[in-house]
Image (tube, rainbow, N blue to C red; front, side, top):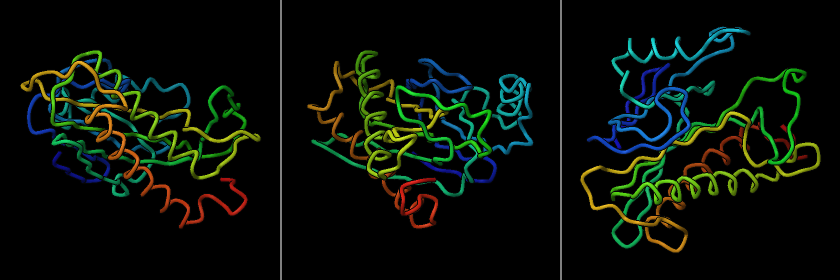
Length: 223
C-alpha cells in the first residue's frame, strides 16, 4: 500500500488490481480497483438536501479516480494512521482516518438532527497480500469491524449509558489481490484473520490514543 496525501485527498495505491469489498459511497460492493481514495469534506460542502452521490462521482472523475473505491470523511486526511501486521507469512496493512463525534452504541440510535455536533466517521482500508474467496472476503471484513468495535469500546466512551461501538457513518474497504490463489476462509483462527485483526487494531488504537490525548474524550468518558 503506497500512500499519497494532498489535502483534501488521501489515496491508498494498492499497486495492482485487487478485489475490493466495501459499502463505500463510490463503487461500493465487490469491485476490482487499484486504489482506495478518501475525499475530505466539510459541512458547507454537503448542505441539507444535497445529492452527494453524483457530486462525489464527479469529484472522483476530476481527480482521475473514477475507477477507484471512494470514501468521504470530515477528518483532516493528514491525520491518518497506518499499521502493518503479519502472521505465518501473510501480511495485512490498515489505513484509518477517524473521529467519534457522532458515536453510537449498536442497537440504539440517537436523533442526530437534534444534536449540534460535527459528523465523525471511522474509515478503514485494509490490504492483504493473499487472494481471498468471496466467502473469505466477507469473513475478513467482519474481522475489521470487530477490531474497530474492540478499539472503540476500549475507550470506555458511553452513549446514553451504553458503550460506544462505532459511529453512524463508519465505512470499511478490504482489498485482496486477484493474481494469488484464493484462500477459502479468513476467520479468527486463520493467519490472514490474525494479520487483518492485528493491523486494524494497531491503527485504530493509535488514533484512539491521540484522540484521548487531545482531550476529545473527557475523563468522564464523554465526547
